[in-house]
Image (cartoon, rainbow over all chains, first blue to last red; front, side):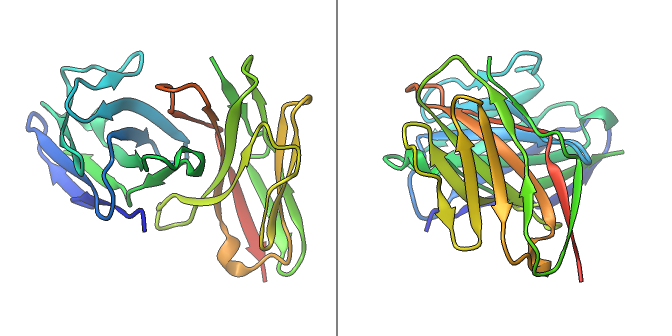
Length: 117
Length: 116
């Protein structure tokens, strides 16, 4: 149980376009999801916490107008990178917390590799 | 703010031998959780082991065990009988026990190589 999926797994886009990444909890309802960014050979950096039915909480330094997060249902959160530029190229990972099982930490999706040309 | 430090960017171990990965953290909280995650080349994050700070007993999961020293704020991971499939990046992570603050703070990672 506790499977998290992401779509797409890999995307290439032109500079200036927007890209949407989906994160789904497949076998549980996730009131809270998290979005991370990972540059090559670096650690995961939390971008924002996504709460179902409310606005996301962004970490300091993350542009909320550039990285739009929508958590419209208990099984789906989306991250939209607006007006993407080459410096936005990175590996984006989502995770979800299983309600009532906080001690188990977070379950992670397989990640999405974004390349902006 | 909490910080997590992994001072070993790379480690290597002979297959079937034992290796220990280090992790220290800084916090003013008394209740929290600590985790070790594994990230293989597929980049899928996999939970290896977790420790609740209020528990004095060190967690163990098959070949994986931790040495949790709360006073020293140290949380090392020991991998026994290393296998080729253990090769990966290992991240130590901290999570507060405060409701509403459930984000994970990760260390910089240790790349583990298994030598056949």
